[in-house]
Length: 348
Ligand SMILES: NC(=O)c1ccc[n+]([C@@H]2O[C@H](COP(=O)([O-])OP(=O)(O)OC[C@H]3O[C@@H](n4cnc5c(N)ncnc54)[C@H](O)[C@@H]3O)[C@@H](O)[C@H]2O)c1
Image (tube, rainbow, N blue to C red; front, side):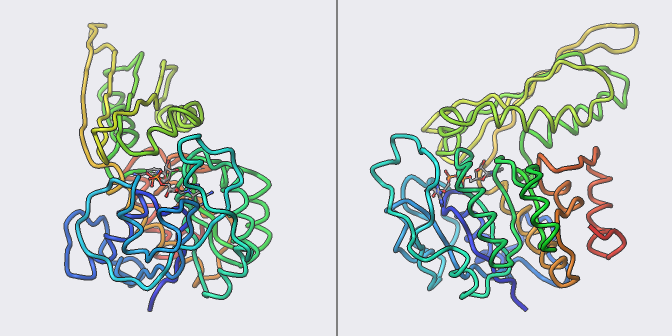
């Protein structure tokens, strides 16, 4: 059995997602969060349609398009695919550096194309500045009765109007803003929980990210405050008391390529009110950190489709995203809720 997906945005995250499918089909196992979910492996995920707006990718076979500039995620496998990247829709005012590379708009409505390919699930991996494009895609997917996964921080699940439409049509919707396998948000949250549990109370904390992918550049130019809002909310959700938090400030360092350095800083006090400061740095992959969680989410959404469960999938959103409608505060609780969903103990 296959899961038929479409990808919106053939950037670094998409490259990791597509390469990973091939890697796991060829027997690779390293770094996989779950081999089986609902009887499916990541190799059962099939990408049958792909859309972008950049001339360097549109018209090329997917296995070739994922390695075109400005993508800079590492190559771990060759990808054989007959899927040709099609024109998407640019509904936003993009950063000036990508304007010369833009294709015109697609003639066929996205919904028609998705219907024609029997796409079950659309994965939105457009940049965080693509606010209007994301909303357009979410509505087109609904018309095609496709489930929608929003990997971007643009509010979709958190947009009441769109979420209500998916509820009404009983089509699965999950998001917003994919949580990395290991990234600054999950590390920051879990360390805060540990410090608070050990009564080493944190009074002030921040998280700064430096990355070399284009998304870091666009975030800097266009969506810094959106990213900061989403990340700060994700961190505050685990804090039992008033704490000063800054999370999600970002800068762009081109020569880092598809890597990210995250700086975490904590100031608090322990027994007797004695103060401490903790400074940590994590240096890891960027796009490849998102792909594994995305496989889990795709397979969980497929389960929802099989069970004819629609609307916002709260548990899957809390498992895989930084800004779900309802936060579950600890990793253990997130995992047990996610497994309950897979077993059918939790409905959504
Ligand atoms: N680990 C991760 O990579 C990670 C984690 C969490 C969230 N995200 C989110 O996933 C999204 C993608 O990240 P990325 O690093 O792959 O970004 P990227 O900049 O490498 O790729 C974005 C792609 O979308 C294309 N695009 C731009 N506008 C479009 C439109 N209107 N329609 C179709 N395609 C369009 C671009 O040409 C590019 O190919 C971002 O919103 C990011 O915040 C990524």
